[in-house]
Length: 131
Image (cartoon, rainbow, N blue to C red; front, side, top):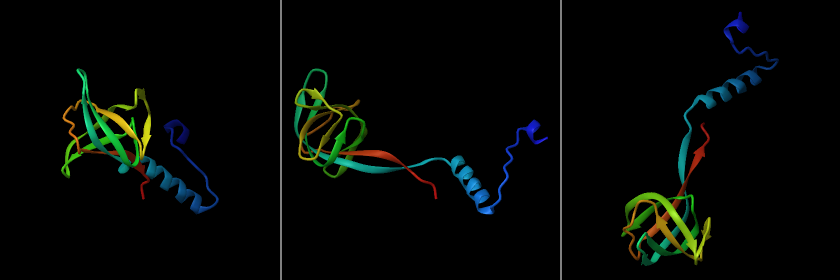
């Protein structure tokens, strides 16, 4: 009957193995939780305007800025934009990341109001293990 109804049956010699399997199954059913992890901060030192984009000429102060990071644009301590990086360049080369102590050009996706003195905070969403 179990085969006909496609019921998963398991045999255990030790009760702890059964408990561990049930806990693992329950964790798999839970919705995944994510947490923000700050990966870097950069200061916009010069704004470069081109016909197509506004580039924030920036200095990476802490950590690193990656081309896949989500960002927060902070002006005078207030978050004015949250979004994603559209382009990350060092000199004339597109790069995947820029480490602390280096300068880069950052363009933001669907946002053009970048000003000198703005801070760009890069973060990633990291999956948190359920308890």
